[in-house]
Length: 276
Image 1: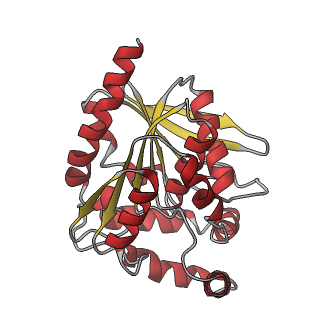
Image 2 (image 1 turned 90 degrees about the vertical axis):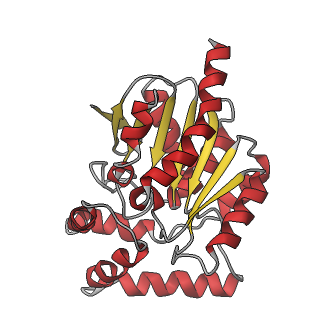
Image 3 (image 1 turned 180 degrees about the vertical axis):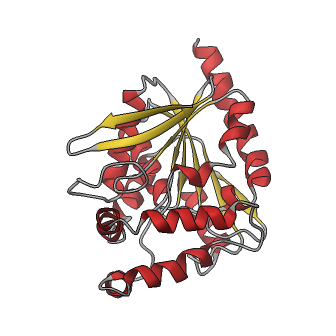
């Protein structure tokens, strides 16, 4: 494993790189770190891919000194990571908010992004303008003050489905303990206020082959299947539903997810061979 710190305008983005071959960049969601992909990465590496997993701004080992923590910033960071590690083409795997970042990166640099795998994707703000405002304000208030960490500590575990790996509790506690740091908590709270409208606006201009992976019990969506089909339809992509999984199927049912992702990414490898 190689750890790299990618310099940005007000801090650094932490990246861990494993393997050799066509590049896959994994972008986690809010409240998670590169460890969200810990069960997916070994399978990708074993299949002959070079895998880079990054931490979002204010998360994990990335800096907490930034002025913005939204989807647009995360997309810029993802592109900076690709540039910083010398990539000329890469597949992006984005989870939750990381999916919005992946979409925006593909929109900004279509020649750089070969494929998109969007897991539990937030790529739009659902509901009316009033509903969105009320929801966002409610989240801000729920996480404000001394009770905020307790609210997140109760909510975060509920995002997982019915089947979890042996190291699940350790991962949950590690993720939560990182947010005990005041600077990380401040950055996390700012991240929760992001709008996914820019990603939705970018969808018509994204033409990378896309695979949408959604847990059938993802509690972040009223109808996970309907949301997956909407996203896939907007991007001309395909859908894989993971029965019983929640918001992080790559960390709950990694074998199922890997079984769907590897054949999809194989075309990326073939494309690279043809270009070579």
